Length: 171
Image (cartoon, rainbow, N blue to C red; front, side, top):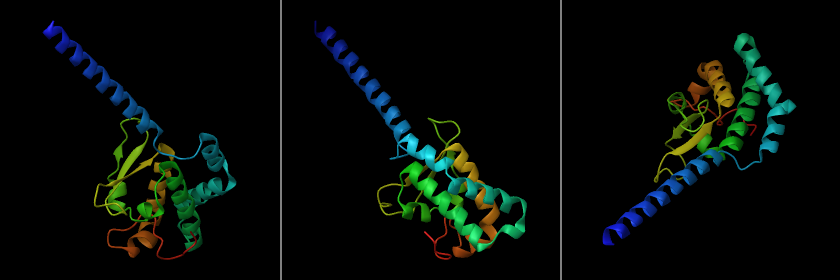
């Protein structure tokens, strides 16, 4: 009888651990936004977002389009998108370095997503801030970094900041 009690307790512990793991995985999938999917869909379908994407594509193809106005428009929209989808503070995003962004790892829950660990942020004494970039947004920000690094991002800081805000204010 004693052994049966031990076995049953072990089974209950295993079931509890499995449920906690499942709950954690579900929570991880839900982390990423405080906005309802309908709101996000409206934003990503909006003319503002679409204009920024088109301008980024034009700047990528034609270096003459890489003006401070284009930079600010694209930066603002991409930063807003990253903030909305990852539910992160603006400061967390502003402190993200080019090295941290380029060192992003693949998400374990969503194959196309990338995870960036930002070390310098408001609560950095505790742990790195985790910013989740869904697939399309990661590709757009990667293009933005490639297009604007030399002229706008690297001059701001030796490590470069992905969302440089010390100049061309507009946020």
